[in-house]
Image (cartoon, rainbow, N blue to C red; front, side, top):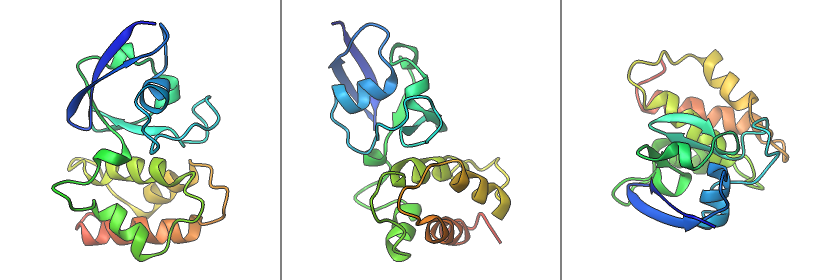
Amino acid sequence: MPLVTLTVNGAPRTARVPAGASLLEFLHDGLGLSGVRLGCEDGVCGACTVLVDGRAVRACTITAASCAGRRIVTLEGLSSGGRLHPLQEAFLRHGALRCGFCTPGMILEAAALLDDPRAQVTRRRLRQIVESHVCHCGMKARILEAVEDAAIRMGRLK
């Protein structure tokens, strides 16, 4: 198996993965990052969502090799300087996690929107993000509350 090196959460990381391995395999299996969830492996459930150059990407749908030279951020790298991202704080404040299957993907996809100064943030768009992820424990109402709260606190939603 070849060695692949990518920039993950601000640092070069190397793992041995099969040729043609997905970014999901590199992050979850190769690096052991538990914030990248293994779900449907078809890009439908959203559990494996990560940020690639600031954009939300389903890691099961892209090869690790295609991410060479790009910045990859997982849930483990979203906080900065020991401080949680406002979305992570909001999920805790609203008790918007139970089983945790969908949490990393939803937080990262919402972060991609809220952290993009050019993006238009609306309640409808936030609801679309939440609805595009599979949630097994039925926390979507609290998750939506948390995402909206973070958007308001970040000055992105009025």
